[in-house]
Image (cartoon, rainbow, N blue to C red; front, side):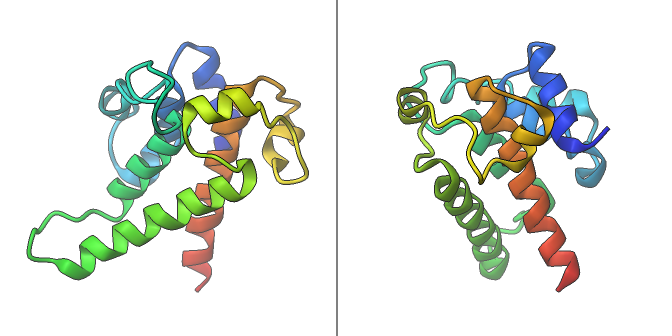
Length: 150
């Protein structure tokens, strides 16, 4: 099963958007799915279910990037800038697709399937949050493949 389909399945099982995104990268991150689900548990629904803050799919993507490009030494300014740049680029790409990254704005806009939501169209997904989730995974996969190709 591909990562986008796995993320969709996680969401259907009751995991939040952030959990559904980060959980599919367990093999790349090197942590168990259970550990990742625990780490992302409070980030769904626009952070804590408020629907007012950053989209959970974006939060899950940023968490995945933080774990894939860890900044663990406070004195490592280059490492800090690297992970910030990855997060900024991911958020920019997500916003390029959906015009927003804030959960409440996305819920109001309900962008749906477009020519930029390839994974959602391929999987026949029409539910709002599921579109955000699989697109976030798709964007992360693109970023990771670009880095390995470079």
